[in-house]
Length: 535
Image (cartoon, rainbow, N blue to C red):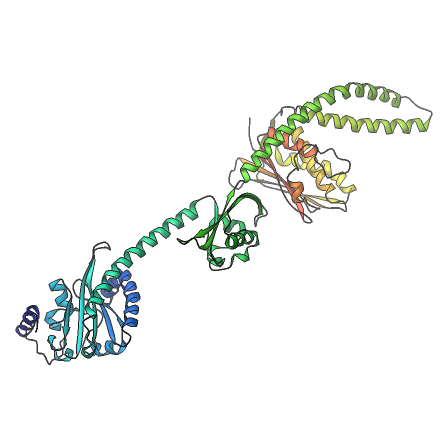
């Protein structure tokens, strides 16, 4: 027996001039752009409908069904399901973009579900038009208040012979599940966005893998260390990065926690980064390992600060030692040198005595230089700064070292920027720094080679200049790099290890920095960074 609202609907159809045996003419239809806009608005609903539609079709695998989605005015947005039924209704004018109203389409389940605001099923002759008398239609109205206030209907169309009393409840459950799924997806996207912001904004480097060691997250600091791009490595095995693979595999295989493991990484630009590494397993509710989380914390600045503090302490200790040695040695040394100088000035008749005196004087001169270096370490003189023209100063120093360089088969080249730079420094002290660094470059190339002296402005601050001294020598090993500015550390057989320490102190007293980069077997570059004017 037909429900009263179905009877009333058919009556209105006759009153509006519709004929049951005549295929209706569609008057209300969306334009292509309007349909595209609506499909964009309902894109999440369409995506979830595809998902649940596939599951429903599989559940009713012996029943040919077509699922249709409409908006809250009855405009058809999309179809999912049986192609044969879709082609059949397409010949009847039912396609995407048309409005399933009563005036054009006669009595139909979509219109009635929206009008009655409840689930509706029309079976066979319940339809007004005869061409639908062999079909069964089921419609559920929905209003997703939590999802942009979207509303409409979800409909199932099948052949009457496949009608089942369970289709309408099944469709109702599907609509309820669709809303929950959309809300869940939005929460997950929101959570993913928060996670992405967190992972990409923290100063730590982060890698996350699944339980098979496949990378699923990879943030900017790790990109900087490895030189690889996130989009290139997501989905790859962690084994492609040897520096991290050992730790993550250990966590995945044993479930152990690693904390504060000190690691040193050499970046793509040959810069060294010192980090603390942590790695932990990711577990599910059943305590099963589902992945691994690794993070590194950059402690390079802290490490360098601690190193500077240790260096300052060594300078202090050296200073006290040097002051005592200088006081005890320099006075008798001055007297001895004075008397030997008088003897050298006399015309000696004994050639051998003269040769001995030359040897003694040379040794005493070296001893005096050593004591002078001790004094400078103990109490470096305060820079007597004045304004000088920097390019001319560098050229004078290079010319001074050229004679020595020629004797050792060295080529000195300069690469100085324009315009001319006027800088406020102690020229005597800074000349000592340049001579020490050039001399070191000579000694790093025992068979000869090229030393390049460069001058440029800092790329970020025009009030800062950069002087570089580069060689193509033996380079400095990783082990030597840690102590290169430490007093008394030397790799030379006859060196005291004070030259670079003195350079460090002089540059520091000019409010500057001295840095270096080196590759064993390739060469070394020392860089002096100075403010153009500093009190």
